[in-house]
Image 1 (cartoon, rainbow, N blue to C red):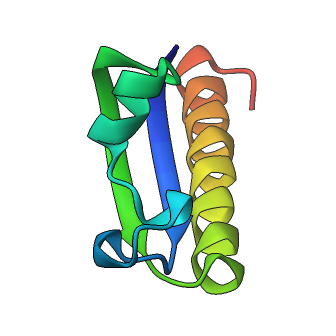
Image 2: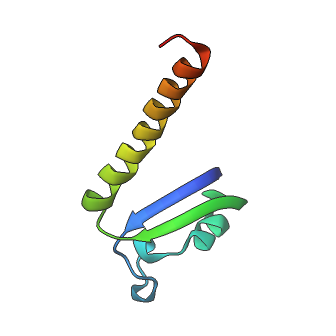
Length: 74
């Protein structure tokens, strides 16, 4: 199973749908490891996913620029 998981959906646990299941349910299916770090975001993916991706790439770009400045290769 996965070591890290991020669930983004609007499914609620009480409706019994697969998308509403909590991450610990995925452990019982073998989808994620029992010691995995997981988070469930209750939001519309079309709104939240671009923000998560942008932040991920922003961190990468900022770290690369910082490394270049520290190493004097800017």
